[in-house]
Picture 1 (cartoon, helix red, strand yellow):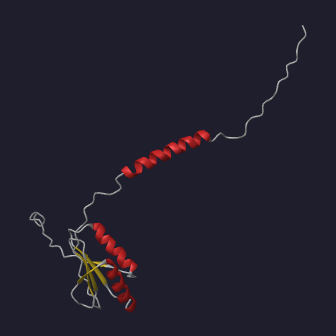
Picture 2 (cartoon, one colour):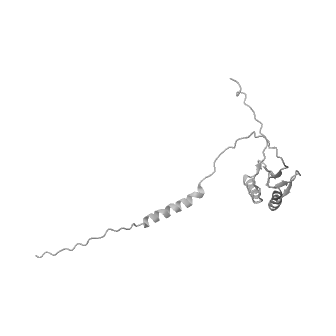
Length: 152
């Protein structure tokens, strides 16, 4: 019997990485995150502290911007009583007023029963009008000392 010479072929090792399975896993993870992200509750349940801050004594008459319980905005300029205005008028009047005096104090007060989103929207309008600083108005808190606090 004649021996047949077996010719062995050496296979070259593949120097490439097959990334198709990694792409599949990544796409599945992307879909999972896209579906679950809107369901996440990103807000925090917090209780804001009460403040006994001192009242500001502005050098100039401040611009008063008030948001009532219904979300209507009132504007008071030069110490006049606040008058109800719409959002566009608010931006126009305050931008004209701030252009004359950029350092005029602007005070924003919102009814505690108004939606926070509305107050935030008014803050955005004030920013559009060119206001650099806005002070938030609040009523002073009455501090009640518990009866057991001072006793030993």
